[in-house]
Image 1 (cartoon, helix red, strand yellow):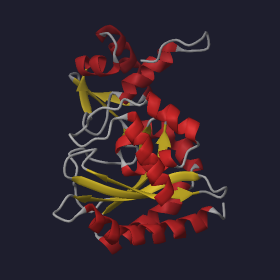
Image 2 (spheres, helix red, strand yellow; image 1 turned 90 degrees about the vertical axis):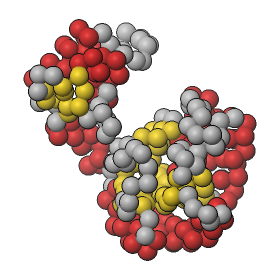
Image 3 (cartoon, helix red, strand yellow; image 1 turned 45 degrees about the vertical axis):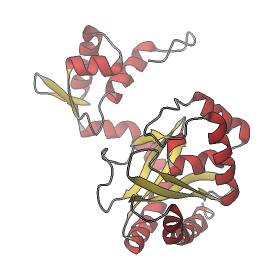
Image 4 (cartoon, helix red, strand yellow; image 1 turned 180 degrees about the horizontal axis):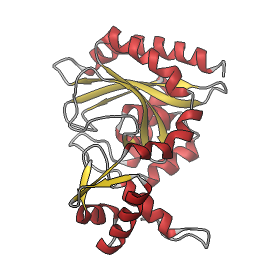
Length: 256
C-alpha cells in the first residue's frame, strides 16, 4: 500500500483500488481472506470495500468468493478510448503474427512495468495467460528493455533503481550495472532479445515504436519457445519482419 504522502492523499481510495488490483487473470475469484492478504488489509477493512464494490456493481459475490464484473472496464475506458495506439497497432500485429506464425504483442511503459495494450496470440507458451492490461517487470522483458533504452539516461536510471530486480529465473539479469550496459547495447542496436529471463523456455525479441516527435512511445515483440536454435537464429528469423512492421506503424503514428 502507498504511504501517506500529504494531506491530499486519500488512503481509503488507495485501499479500494488495492482491492480491485487483488484480482487478476490467475486470481479471478478470491475469498475475503484472499483479498485481505493480497491487498494488505485487515479482513474487516477488505469486507467493507468489497461490500461497497458489490453495491456499485464492480464486484459480484456468491457468498463465499468474490470476482470482478465487466463494469470495471469503465475505469480504464476513458484512457483506452483516448489512446489511438492499440487501434493503430492491432491490424499490423495480426499481419505480423500470420507472417511469422508466432505470438506478437505491443506494450507501453508504466512505472517499472510494461503493460500490454495489443496482442495476437498463436499458442500459449507461458504459464501466465497474457491479456490486454497484463503487466511484467520491464527489466526482464524484451519490450521493457527497448522502452528503457529509449529513455533519457537519468529517467532510465531512476526506473532501474525503483525496480525490484528479482531473479525470476536462473538467467535473469539483475545486476544494475550489467543491466545498464545491456540497455546501452539495446539502444545502440535498436532491438532487444531476452532468452529465458522472464520465464524458462521463453524467448522474445522486440523493437521500439516511435511517435511523431521521435520518442519511443511503445514497443512490439515476437515471442517464441526456446529451441535448439541459437539466439542469433531467432534474430535473423524475426527481426526483419519486426522492423518492417514497426516502420509501417510509425508511418501512421506520424500522421497523428
